[in-house]
Image (cartoon, rainbow, N blue to C red):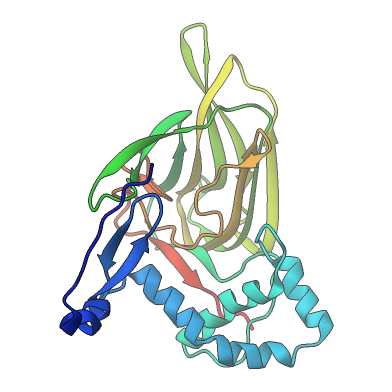
Length: 295
């Protein structure tokens, strides 16, 4: 039976009452809550996107059917939607005061991950951990500040397929230079921990391309893995997007569209980073999500 509550405000203050409060739920947990006077960054971005719709709609209306079909082809939504893909990209351009309109690109859309490695930086590695079990914090519905631990189960079944779109503008500093995008799989065999790499070697100078690698077998029993972007003795810029790590018929990559790769540990993600974290830290290297003006 649903829990109910009742409020009878003074009639003289009824207008003021509804300026401050709104109905939150009338069914499972009946209540009113204060209207939000301050928005977080994600809510602000959503509001900006909606406010740009008139301008973006005028651009979309003059597109030919072929142009609209090209946007539909690169859409990453479950139901291919060219309009949504165009709004996502064009709203970023408007916010950044960039002229012209966005062009569909099969390799990257909207924001992409960017890593800038200066000269003589040495080693640097980003990781995205994927243990077979970890907990995230989820807000309890109807409670103001109560969270519950929710288990995430990611049982690893081979084969595992790694895919990424990338562009590189890197320079090797010596003969020991390494640049690789990989999934490092941990397996157990006769009391030993064994790491087997499913790796994509990064070409030092490469325009946008899509690369794929598959690992079908390991020694022993595969238990867990982590994604890794590793650089040693190189400098320059590296861009990547559309990250996919697929096993058991599902893409398990967190932030696959690279909307905010600099996001690490949060209130909800305390055991593993929400997106990426530094495994080999280097204060000289900078990384984050950004937009490439490639009209």
